[in-house]
Amino acid sequence: MSAAVQKSRSTPKKAGWVYIMTNPAHRDDLVKIGLTTRTPKTRAEELSSSTGVPAPFHVAHAIYVTDCLAVERAVHGQLDRWRLPRREFFTVSVKTAIATVERAAQTYLPKRRSRRSRGRRVLGVAVALMLVVAAAVAAAWWFGALPVALPG
Image 1: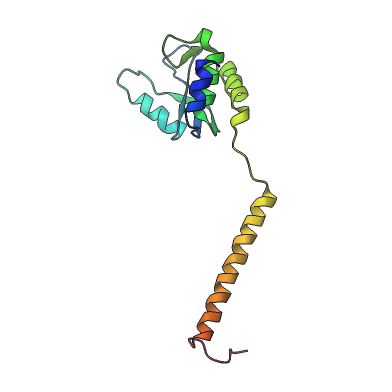
Image 2: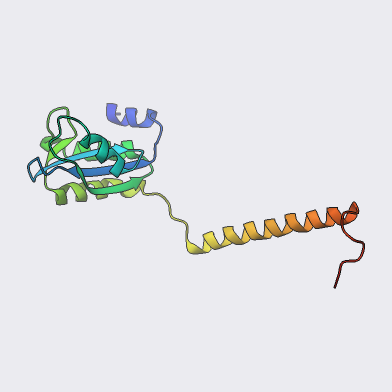
């Protein structure tokens, strides 16, 4: 088993964003591919606030995944030959970066609930609420907090 696979198995999954950023001060074919558990916009602002950055970073693409570390590792591995040494920068087009991220993220996309299951959940909550109200009214009547005869 490879060291990368062992490391990914020992690292707990963390949902978050894998992003692609560009900077107008850099070459057109230079992209930053990274991860964040906050929003990509917040991360871009953090990177842009550094004194060594002549222009702000722009989020070219971002995708929310259930294991952002695994997706980032997969993307970095696939684009390794275009990677700047020890950095998250790659000399590839934005289009190539997006395709690579999208491909790596496929097995880590959050499960979406169908409209039907969401409807059942809402209905279940409504029924539970009605039962609680009915029990409260019955208890109030039983202990004499309500009039003996209800109007009607």
